[in-house]
Length: 381
Image (cartoon, rainbow, N blue to C red; front, side, top):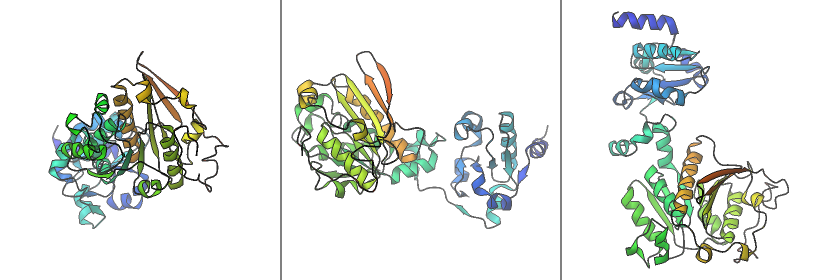
């Protein structure tokens, strides 16, 4: 059968939508560009997803899992998109159509289009594996490059989180840490090496991240987070990664995040066990909903006192990096309202669900955020 005949049969089978009809109800459709990358770089319908025809069968289910969703596919002239729409019908999709005349007609008629994204050639190569994920793609990668993430602590948890966030292309990363690299840190704080001993952790981390990914701008805050500087520092970021190793700092992070309504990706480690969760201010529980009061100091010694398995922070910090990317991209289901617990001795994972406490002293009243105070090591004011 000739190609032209195949196209005509596909058009008759799935139907076509005109540019005028699509423009009138654009928000009602998932619009997908199935052309090749070289074509898309010349221009595309604004707010359209991108999935080349060659990977349609493999990846479309992840891009649009709802088989009943209204879908419009487009190519250059409307032929390839008609064949692709027929393929979707064979895959069980129920409401698919091809754009009549394709992008050429859309553009000729003067409808809204744009050159997709700002990724240069080097970035397209670097982030190729992200671009191949329909859930991220160009739009998601651009959002990562525009994101501003603050990591509190450049230690055991901060090290893997920083490395993976930088590798993922988070455009601006702030680091808060007033300590210097010590030889005892090197067992787990993998962003530093022996040549960094004695250097500020923020500067050591900055150098390693710059070597890893020149796209990333690192903002170093070589201080301890305190009630006096927390608002000024945290206000400039979209997400806070809590890599602190003590309760006073965790409570302060929680309280300033509530005040500024910033999501927090929390992690902690102790000996052989690690935990992670996400706090979304006034949408879900906060840190004080989970831990209203700190444990007595004798029941919660620091890692320096109790020890910690060196590889453990790498696992939890990597989970924090994933959760941060999900928060930035509004991707999947975060750990909000769930405390993920990992036991390295038996390689077990468990999840504890917890709700927002209506009587929480920190988040029960959105109009009255908690005062910011500095606590001592026993969390006394």
